Length: 181
Image (cartoon, rainbow, N blue to C red; front, side):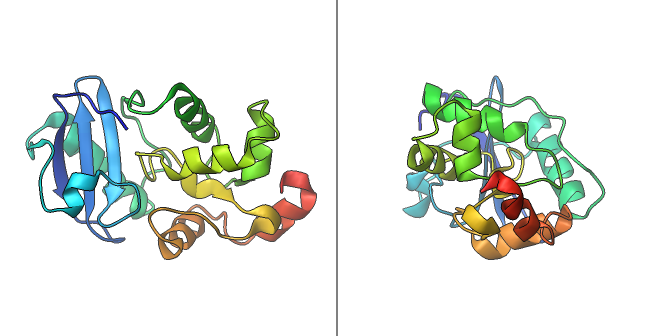
């Protein structure tokens, strides 16, 4: 991942644990649960790659909207996003994730077919897993074949909570049996 050199960050507490938010001059560029896979490596070593900016208007608004979303008070996000940290392929996958509506799920296979790359299921899965904007870019809405809860960098427990919050958890098996697996 390549982030803008003027990226700033802040940390906020949520009902699902601490979250680190990052913003570039172009928009929100990161939302990571603390300790999740694929968060910027330097955090894991105790270093801060970006300046702390707790008073940054976009980061404050992102924190506010995230809190509202996790409390069930907001159905989606209205934030400028910066997806340019990923490869062109990753950006294509992340844009496709934005089209998965609240309360809906899709499978990795269906997503790869939607992108016109039916044989690229593993590559699509890898791009979904590297999504730097957890929750905001809804990678939690992608499930395994048969509706199984697989592959969430923030942890399967959080994925289950997010899907339940969106009323997407109960129909997972019926969605998979309808040909979305």
